Image (tube, rainbow, N blue to C red; front, side, top):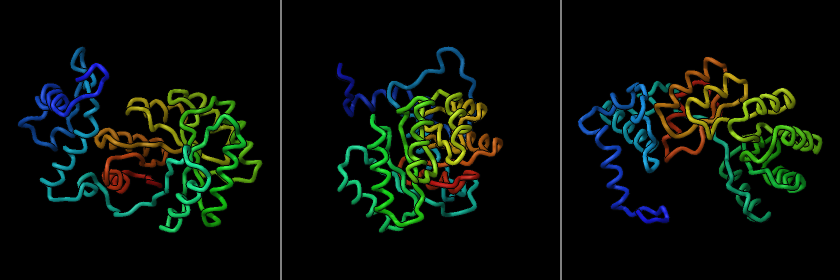
Length: 265
């Protein structure tokens, strides 16, 4: 590896062979994905490179192939479709490109759309929400994602301003830093006309604390299948719907079809 932190292909393979492969070799994939470990001392360390999600996806894929089942059936799914919203990485786009992106999504049949907000000036957010509302069909669901841009008080003020401007927001995603559970709960209580979508950046333990603290109307999950099956069970216990996002290839579709109470992908 270079001092800049850029790894060569050879370096990546070497790290995988040293840190990951010894725990996998000779083991059945289905046993590995269901394994429950008790972390102690030095055996609970992150890999030098973020292999964990890729390894889980690969092991579940192998287990499903060995069972001759689609992944969603192997993990308990009974439906084979789920609603999808169009999420735009749109913050850097000018208005014309922004409108073209979501017009294309609407033409493809989407009826729900999520855009980035959190600009220093609320007027910019209002402008982009208004532009989206003009671009997509009437009655479409509009979601906004602040990517942890606000404090709790600022989020409440912003959401009130958006509401007074006449926009119906289906959910606000990650309005606060991920661990501000009290602030997220305050937004839920203060803005009952919308939903707080949170949890994307938390690990399984963090998601459990988030739900216990009452910080989410919708739990955002992605990536590590084994963890998400356990988190999905906890969400069902808390009666909190789940949304699946940012998951490698089509794995997210399988997860969304298998987890209980998934409303959106």
